[in-house]
Length: 151
Image 1 (cartoon, rainbow, N blue to C red):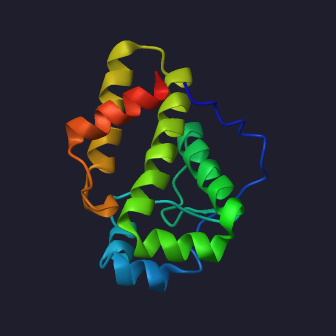
Image 2: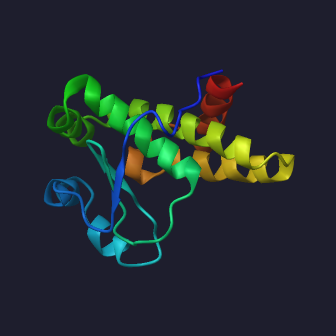
Image 3: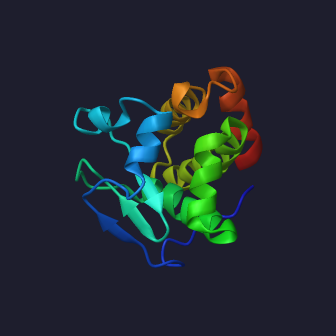
């Protein structure tokens, strides 16, 4: 089982704004900025700041996901991490797999009911297997990868 993220381990700022590299993100993911103004909740970590353009409240499990990205960025430097994240679908997938596992672990702490956990892992697998992360794996494969890492 992966370690849980201590949500107090890293001071994070949460702002209602676009990240500083939204233009570069939009080049790789056309239309993402328009989706941020709609019903989709998409968050971005840039250093020690979580950018939450929708301004909606963040759950602890989403914060854990973004804290993990902040830790990943600290290893290589924020700009270098983002450059690679946007250019390399395999790297992006691996970073997101790790963050989705941390998110699921936090979700499990807050939601002990099996039905809730099953539904949420399916949501995570759908997201992880989708176009945003390059459709690197199927939904079933994503679900198995999350289960392998978490259990």
